[in-house]
Structure formats: C-alpha cells, structure tokens
Image 1 (tube, rainbow over the protein chains, first blue to last red):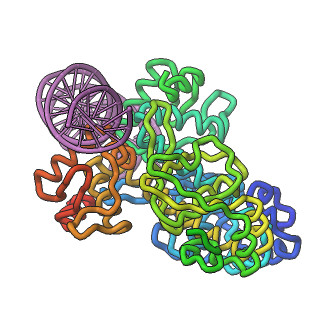
Image 2: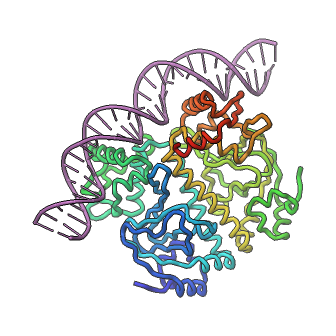
Length: 229
Length: 229
DNA sequence: CGCAAAACCTGACAATTATCATTTTTTGGA
DNA sequence: TCCAAAAAATGATAATTGTCAGGTTTTGCG
C-alpha cells in the first residue's frame, strides 16, 4: 500500500509533479498514509488544517453548510487531486468540509513542507497557481449554472459530468454512485425535487436506474437539455 | 495622471507589492495607462489577454454570458485589484468579460513581465497565490448563496456588500450606483423580479431610492433578512 | 428644447421549485 | 434472517420566481 512519492504516479496529475527529487523525498518521509471509509470526514468546515491531502484513490465531496442547514457540494475531488491547499496557502481555516463518498486512500502532507517548497521553488508555486486558476474558472462556471440554468438542466449536467469524469461499468451504470441527497446537494435543490427529476428522466428513457445506481441512456438528449434544446 | 509603479500606493493592495524594486521598474517601463469610460469593455469573454489590468480607479464588472443570453456578474473589481490574472496564468482565453460600471483608470501590464516574475520570484508567486485563494473562497461562498438563499436575501446581501465595500455619500446613498439590470445580474434573477424587490424594500423602509441611487436605511433589518431572521 | 431610446415600473399569469405528509423500498447490522 | 432505520418515492399544496405585455419616467443627444 504505502510507497514513496518519488514513484507515485498519482503525482503526475497534480502540482507535486513540479517538485524536485529532494523535495519529494522530504514529502515522502513526512507524509502519512490514511485509509478513509465511505462517509467519514477528512476535515470539517472551520477546522485549521495543518497539511493537505493528496487523493490516491476514491472520491470526496467538498461541501459547505448553509444557514438553513443544507449543505452545498462545491466540488468532487478524486484521484490525483489535492485537497486543503486553499486553506494552507491562505493560512486560514477551511471554508469547506471534506467527506468521503467512497472508500478512499489519501496521503496527508504537513503544511510546512508545502509552504517551504512554495517559497523556494517557483516552478512548484506556479504549478499550484495554475491548478488554482483552473479551480477558480470552474467555480465561475458553477456560479453561472446555478443562476441561469433550471434544476432539470443542472441534473442533466451532473449525470454527464459523472459519466465523463468517472466513467461507467460494464452494464452502463455510472462508476460513481451518489445518494439522491448528494445529487440534490450538488445541484442545489431539494431532495424531493431531485428524485422527481430522476423519475422523470427515467420515464423518458434518458437514464436508467437500478437501486442507487444510475446509467446514462441518451447522452445526446441530456446534452440538448443542458443547452436548452 | 501617469506615474511610476514604484510610487503607486494602489500596489499595496495587490500582489504587486511582493515585487522587487527592479521588477517594479520593468513593470513601470512597459505598463500602459488607460482611461476607460463607463460602459466600455476592457476585454470580452473568449479573448486572449496579453496582460493584466491593475485598477487605479473606478469599478468594473466581471461577467459571463450564459446560453440564454443573460449575463451573470461574477465579481466586481475596484481600486487595487488586478483583472485578467487567471487567464494569463492558465494561458487560456478569459472566461469573463470586463466592462466598466464607472469611469476607470487602469494600468495594462504585459503578461511577459508577470510570468517572468512568477517564475523567478517566489514571493510574488506566493502572493498571487494568496489572492487567488481568497478569490476562490469568495467564489465558493457565492455558489452557496446562489443555491441556498432566496432572491430577496441575495438582494439584501448585495446592498450590504455595496455599502461595506464602496461606502455611501453625504446623503446616505451608495457611492456605487448600479442599474437595476446590473443588480439583477449580480443576484442572478430577472430584472423585473429585482425591481419588485427594490420596490418592496423601499415600501418597508429598508432602503430609499432617488432615481437610480439607492441608500441603505435599515442595515440591521437587511442583515436579519439575509440570515433568515 | 424636444424627442426617441433606454431604463424603470407594474399587473396578470404561468412555470418552477420547495415543503409537508405519507408510503414504499432498501440497507445494514444484531 | 429479520427488523429498525435510512433512503427513496409520490402526492398535494404553497411559495417563489419568471415571462409577457403593457405602461411611465428618465436620459442623452441632435
């Protein structure tokens, strides 16, 4: 299970690839490997993080609790992504909670190493910056979607997103299975509305379901829906 | 009007403060001072930017057009803020348009200088990173507000935001005047709905209006509204 | 100044979405 | 295996918000 960062392929997908051999060695020596069970929290909103989490396997939801008690899922983080960097960089407590939505394997990397490397290796800093710039763009897109698209459109988009990013199994069901409530929290709607739309899509042959599993049947039609026909 | 970046106070508010004397000199030598009239665009969605804009005076809206023809204002940028950095860093075309909502004075800084400095001065890179981290957090907050708060709550929030960030004049009206349509695009609603809420707030004494100008009367009550009582 | 265009406002109505109440199904231990 | 708890589903209804179709006021410009 455990291994050296120097040899870890995951690293290729995130900013750690801009680290030098030496820096990676240090990371590897101080990192802590962790298994996290589905449903367990990696960290909670408001906590002070003393490091970042590099996801080796599994998926986590990053969400924020709102005043009315619902929580909004802002992002899904999976293999290769680093969680908690925003908080470590800004030296503030996190604005988001991270909860595993499948069993996970993560490496915890103490913040000192991250900030030291940021301060001395511009390549690394720029690489992190690039990733953050990408996240920011995505966040802007989410804002526009939230305010301009209907719940139905956002649901359709969510299914397509999951299919494109996590793929499907042999039977055509999405690899990543979310509860109806999680879907509602991604899309920003009530669980009941979410369920109704799933029923509707199913009735119209756009998707299929089997228990909690959902499969995309008519990608084209879902796309048309997202685009507004 | 024109002056040297080394002496510019504006710089204290953004990442340029982490530049060395030498770097600032280079910036100053290649920067281009520009006046932008209210309503004019600094750049349009999809454009490739060959530099960033440092705002010396005035305010710009950063917005994104959605499929249905409305545009969503994602952020207001004012004195001290730098626009276009996301695009320059990620080396992509902008995802946002920037249009002046008051007369502006900006300095255009060519991207080469920015990226050179990023690659050689880790302090600067980290400072930019910090600012971007802050923007990202704010974007997350906007997402949550969009999905969890009612239009009325978001309107109330908008007035408080403008009061706190841009202040009010001697008569208690907000210094920054937005059109009803701009308010609607900030809040993510239809212009008519926006106008109705303004009328409603006015009727209930929460705000006052005089032409396009709006003044906050009952800050406390607006706050209560935002919090959900 | 005068006038056309733009911005603002209002009403009536329709569509979307949330809420509450209840039933059915699924799931994960004891 | 069985049972309680959780999750999913559905109906009825209310609240929120958008749309369309007019008005009125304000603004900028020849």
